[in-house]
Image 1: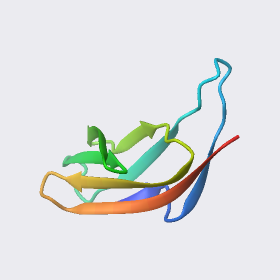
Image 2: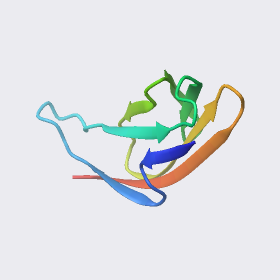
Image 3: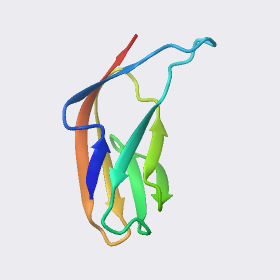
Length: 86
């Protein structure tokens, strides 16, 4: 597995939407076997599962975070990043 986005220590800038909410970004992962199920966690919270296309749309709060993925066979990978709101 390898993260396509975000890269390690990336700064993600999220913009405010017309309705006042904060925008989202898409996290993307490449897996040697795309058919594997992958479980996604933002910091310590479970945020979803993917299979085939490993993309997860998230809207993290400002500050430092870590996204961790664990596939169905127990392999895990994490990346740290920073979020700023514009």
